[in-house]
Length: 322
Image (cartoon, rainbow, N blue to C red; front, top):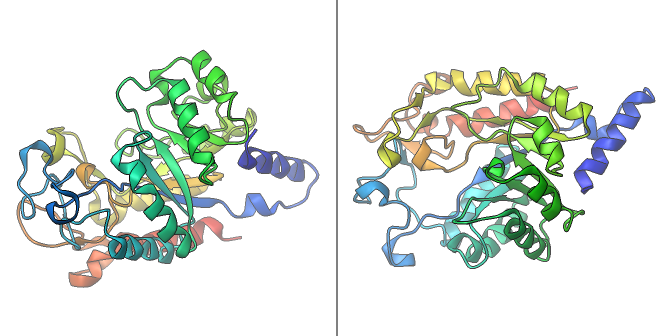
């Protein structure tokens, strides 16, 4: 059982005893972060910015255009600014995308950790589904990362492997907090996970969050539903499905439902997944074919670029209100 699971057990005991629990009164907030962007000047190529045959820096595989332009995740000045921006939004933890030992994301993790911690942020990991990943590989990665001081992990596409294989693999890392990417509480429990998270803000609109978190509490799992502003991956992947932002109404709706669920954590999809249009990092209004944050929460111009970050701070305060 990981540290967060122990915290949950204490919270439950306090409720049974009729005592307010500090852990129950301050849900944490974490945001998914992608350290995989590259430029020819710093990294030798337009890493990720040229996906789906796009031609950066003006032509990007995104429905939105970053206010910072097409940037490099290896730039310490940029990463420092991003971490400070996330901290100002009242977020507690950055969840860095990680594609295995030796991957680009692995080599940049030290920079993310340094700048995140300097900004007062915790660091967690989203273990991604690299080719032929099996639970034993994920557990080995967790052991390696625990040696670097990380204790919390989110396993994307955890349902690709059997519950029995996960239970066996995770038994080797009992002191880690490991979350399954699923809304199926029983499946996560059988797999030996400590909690669940939903990630996908196209499929999960938030209506099921109260039920999912209630079921998780009943079996001693942590609940970390994921909220996000919208979804649009067509320019990056050709996926024609969309969840419109509705000038912030979509983000508000998901947050409201997450707060109602009384979660242990709220996870945000995402800070900078520009491919899928889930990002809340500032976006610049540059015209077609890109959308913008214009009109979100009544903001226009430069003020609109930060609309979703500022709204995040508002919802974090609502989440923690007595």
